[in-house]
Length: 460
Length: 105
Image (cartoon, rainbow over all chains, first blue to last red; front, top):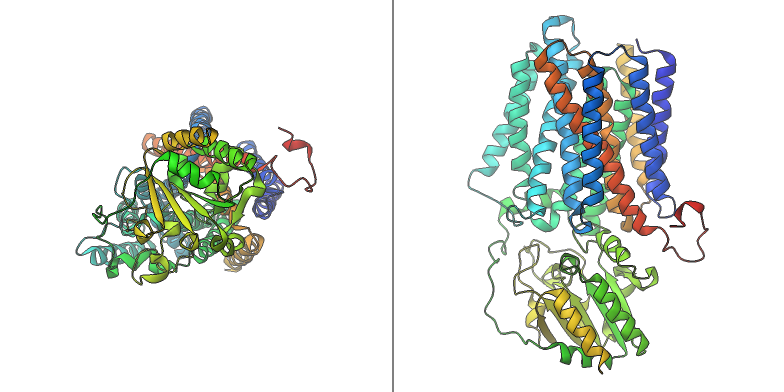
């Protein structure tokens, strides 16, 4: 039986987690909230060493030190553009840890035979299965975001059948564990769970991956919660459940922000969307332009709106962009940034990236407040963005992004795209706006183009 | 059996708390919130420490230590990367916002 003061310390840590989540939902308190969460975790770690009679303490402390150093360095060194995949990776290893913990516990429970409660065994099987799904699913999302594999949905014949069969196997073997626990059954659940996680995420299109990370985050939370029941630890139960519940709700909020439904995100590709194959470069004619022409266009405009996208951040052109906006401001041009909720690769990602380049907060306008202004804009400059201004979201049912709210860039008098190539956006579909008579394209690396543009504006 | 009901009670109440505390989050903070929640389930580290500390075979010890490393990566990496994201937001609040000592940097 866990001593009372330890239970109370766990309660304190759980309260820290609740306060952390609450504070994280408001910009003013978010950073403090995160620190409170970390403090709660620290309290719990100190207490567990203090109260329990543990062996192998040296080895455990070394493992913690190794993990902490690697985690901190990874989190400090990662480029802000690659942050979504790092979050996916951290989530995955958490799920993996939960599955391993439950496997070890099953190893201890199995020899006890029928004296173990059925519900404990069911929770153990659940922790293994969901932890493994989260681990494998997160690794696939990592590979997609890191571009180790294609960002487009991966579908093959029989995928739904393979998925259904794996799910049945996991459930059936979990029932066997409840009836007659054995370690090897747990290992089967773990291995099939891994396959299930991969099969779940493979058919998801690149643009939807952030929502899936959030969903897998909730999965890991539930897995940890079930692990808490198995280990008779209230903190794991409360912490895991909090993340499971808030993660599920956050997933729904994110899906709503993109105008998507969760079943559509997960299984839409299996039904066969009409535009899934349209990843090739089109040979329709486009109008390309030079930096000097764009400089004249911008320099003599009254109202300019910038639509920044992930390509801007990849090319590290945010700083040159801010220089350009400053120059235009000096010439009396009114310039705003239009920030789509999912600009970048995750909701809010673009705000972080532009904040890094010290763009003033007041110039960042959210979609709802700026969408009415596009029709008064002389020029819209789209830098490294594509899907968030693709009219297919309004007009092409069956397109992977259909229904997603977009920025009304097509209503402006002139549209200039700065693009590296004619390659389609992350969602893998063609953008009709590129072929609009009002549109001109400035090809090249965003950083180089932005540099020449800044110079050209200076000489106006 | 009553003990199971206590656990169920804690679970159900936690579900409501989890949804309620984040219900009003602004879209700008979706990513940091996801990342912060991600760090919180790193608390599985407690479970990993407990099972590793009672491991009675070399195999179990090795698996346990792997779990400890993975859980620590989740927890420490999660909190640090969230802090780094939120660092970007501080210091550029609207001037009317109450100023606080911690974000003078």
